Image (cartoon, rainbow, N blue to C red):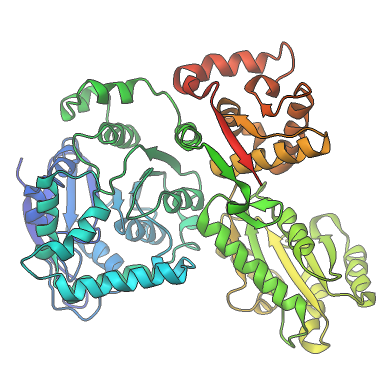
Length: 595
């Protein structure tokens, strides 16, 4: 199997080198951070990737501008230019429809291309990627200093013969690498880019933010991520899957950002990708020759993506401090990025309520059903000092006179107030809602009222899609103009980690109310909570936790799996029969929990 090289010219004259290999339906790979088509093809780090992916497809790869065999001397190395180069290559090859693979930063370009050209992408695969670049992730000062130190290291040592400088990057990418892998990866870095282009690529990647774009993806999507990835944290992969409607998420048991051929996660990755692309097992049988331990890791598990994620997450939990995941007291988010975005929102709300600012203090939230947006607003008010009122109006449930009366109640408030306008995107056939609301959205500006409005809806699949629908309505554009820049947020649906956190929190709270101290929860019980669709929101989990605590005998401080079910409950028997082959190892193991 040998690859063929070719060149395509971008609109700005930059020459882009691409490689094709294999036969079958086209599979296009968007370029990742550093690559060199010739060196990658021979490298033990990457060779198994390209050979296996080309076994049943025509695999197309290319070096991004400024990298590898593409032109190095380029003015524009922006993210938009990367996406444009992807358009250039597929157009040059005459591809009408194709599967698209994005690895690491290539996942972002692949996602953006899928938003722009959904009619051409029939399947999207994202591995080890992110929606938000490092400089947009609310970094701590230490994280920012570390990122800048690595950039300085690039400038100083990237092109030197001594690989000591580049070893830092190689170790982050492949902590389990062999000496041969490490040497090859070190040399790949030097061959693929100049120090200047490595720095430019890194800085541009750090600015990527697709949180408002990924929810617009409509093509079938598979997201995979190494559980202990040191280069792109696992939570960022979970965020990608949460942002893309209908995406399937598969966690992989690996520390390596680039999967090695002889690790158990590699055949799992191939099996998932081939199944997603419609390659039968018999077609791919010769592609992988795993050892006995690898075969076991594939054949034993029949878990879905959510179940596999839940098993991996809960198996690794020994002690959970709920305070670590708290946004405001009583409201937690497992995903670090979402958690910090909501903390920023809470801080802005607090500042708007604290003192009259003479500015509009309005916020717009798109929140998936069951994500707890109302509870976030309630707990935000509860966390604020002084006397702050909470006022809630649900547009979907109110007539025009009722909605106006609810707003006018605020005119008599002497204390500052957070007003939640829930389902602000409701009643699209009516002309009055935003006309009635507008004067109150200006109250902080025009009469120094200490009102903060939180407007929340869930239409569409993202805040940008919801805004488009609002803008098409009478006075919708005017209403959106009252929301200051930076005051738009997106709360994804509860993920596996969120359900685990809410369950633990509710078990503790229900125990306090019943006069029982809950100190730990059986892992198999948490697995049931995390994988049972009917327990998909906080209200359902609350009721479930209360019943479980009622079944705890006096003197017991553990929530056991058996406490989750009443006597003779058929759901217990059914769940155990289905889950014991894949999650039986979680029985009689406990997670210690504290506030």
